[in-house]
Length: 425
Image (cartoon, rainbow, N blue to C red; front, side, top):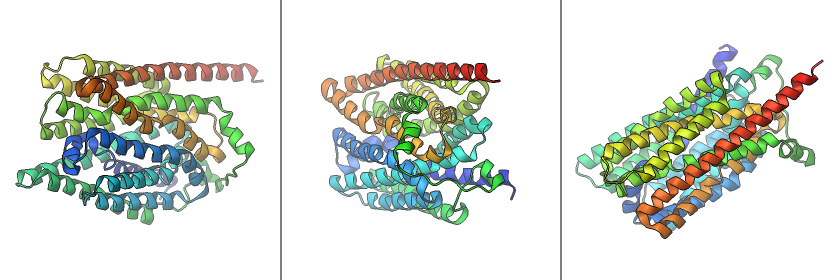
């Protein structure tokens, strides 16, 4: 197999892993009301569960970079998928509230600490400089395709079980089992077919081995002193705040707009199919017209869509809300496919790449903990309808701050490039 085919095959397996590890964790996106009913919990308690998940995520992001620089990515990804799959089998037993929190903490550890920076680093190293936009776009779009296919299968299982006369509990359990088994299967595919040490395309040619990172003052200075690392962290923080609204839109359609559970699941599956479109298209457009420009435009349209969801009267035809959800998802998936593509502009040495990804992730994914807390506060203050509308508007404001941060990132980069050009002999 030639070097390009090897790169693409490894990339495909990483996309498959990324697409199978997260859907079960965010099952609330399409089945929130069913989860509340089956597990006998309130929306506030569900937000509490996701806050616990968010804490595990935030704690795990930075050290995940160190782990990715020190240990075999193949083994880390295998362990992550296997642990998350086994925890999913436990989740399918419909345990009590405290056990559910424990399961989500397990997911939080193994979906971030051992997985996140490992899979991001591999993609960055596999992509050539001119391919970074499309590789990260395809990563998000490809995992979105995997998620959409799995969500379609899940919807078929759910509706078939409910249509066959069984209750929501049996239908939800069947969906959870499907996602869990898929993760376990993919774990063993990674173990069997991914090389133990992934090299960059340059390393394939030179047979260089990746440098071993040492944790010392110079190592931390190498990325903490890089302003682009901080700016990228800010861009992802504000953008990801917008992304977090995805997991509330299904519940919004059912509890506020009064669309039935099966139709909501159908809409959210349709919305998930926007991911391969938005992520891949955004990546290719970003390579052509500028990654930061495309990201800013996607954020702007997403902001407008969120505000529209919040201000359109609930007596409006349901298709209006359904269309807005689809549009917002399309923009969100473009955003998710693009913000990591800016990593290649941050002038990070490969020896601290994993640590840098971990640190940026620590900053950028704070909404994993913060958003459920904000949602709970707004729901408590304004009630179900007012609280969800306020949540959409709040995160639209975060999107606007994201656009400002992108403009700052681009201006600094442009200024630095101009200085480098001027100083060339």
